[in-house]
Length: 529
Image 1 (cartoon, one colour):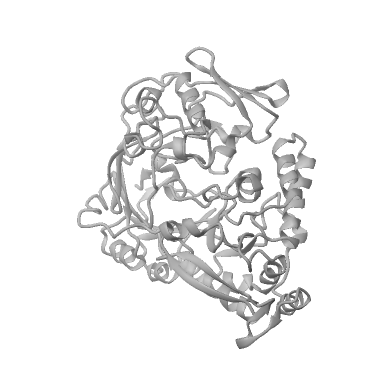
Image 2 (cartoon, rainbow, N blue to C red):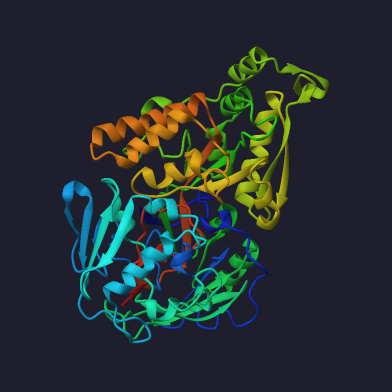
């Protein structure tokens, strides 16, 4: 993770890949821009909810909430609401956390073990609309042992369990009396984090102020605003005018700040990948030969060079090439001749207009991408161009997520996914057949019994060598039996006014909240002297 001046257009904005936001903010969004103790940053999208019970902040770094543990700049676990790392017993089946003394919620009420129990039990309740519930599959029970101790009992030893406890904790005395799916807590949260939400104007902005009860000390940044500005040009214009302290920009606009000595670019590597989902329920993408041919036909390196201008890496699977769990023998070249050979052998013969057909079925399907997302649009168009050279007709279509979601089971989507940390965190929800059709989990409806077995082995084993073998097997299976065409891993880059010390970046996931980015540690920023 580095900081640098922009020397070229070699950048990709993380949030341009998110859900399309509503209209740009009206006047007043940037009123605090440039203020000594305030920050205004423009992003392209906003979360659907601010409730951890529904998945908000589940990977840590929420500014409103804290988990039992947190991650530092190097992603190492450190105590947060817990006073120390957990005590692990019973062969990895029990985790005991002792809470930090004196922690209060932003309403002044004390944090207790009951709040932790309430949070986890509610997330695990099947009636709660949390599509990340499978991430806590190992939890058999969670109970309070007095006011300051929480004990988790697992069904099986789960090696990365401690990292799951970055899940934000909510106050039972506030959220407990509400429906977790519809209650006002979703938009009026109360937490223990360094900041308190003061206003949320949907499609316009979210504003926060320092939490007077924050256990970690008083932040130097007293308030900050996340301005929701979907239009790239508007974000750049408002940053240039001084209406904003920072913005997420696409490469061509970020390059226009190259000579602005008052701005600095913050760059982070990420697990954030772009991939095309290939639903097995579709009559064309359900054919393994089609999926294999597309995997061979796509020119990943060209996408990195031309779309990302070098700010990324080819994606040969869900794990980036520099991840320690990455299987190095899965890299494969762009090979159009191989794509054509696969289709020929499978009986897909070239027909009218160069498009192949088999049994009267044309090799054609629609690929959706979220409207307003230029990075995904460019990926989709390049993918369609590569596919056509092999004789597969891919019609690219933009739509809102309201239109796309009901079609995901049978239509291809230019998806953005990726989780940091243990490989179980991203691979299980992406590939396990039990999660097919569960929201954005396993969007392709992928069903491979050998992969399911390896995912279960990776999740349940305590042996690092056995886990490594399982995840290598999964990555190799995705070469011979692809359910997705993995395209690129994207570097995240942010342009901000250069007036604060302490800004750093982490290795980032693909996410739609306000955790990832240089503001992940905004409570630690200090004015430059």
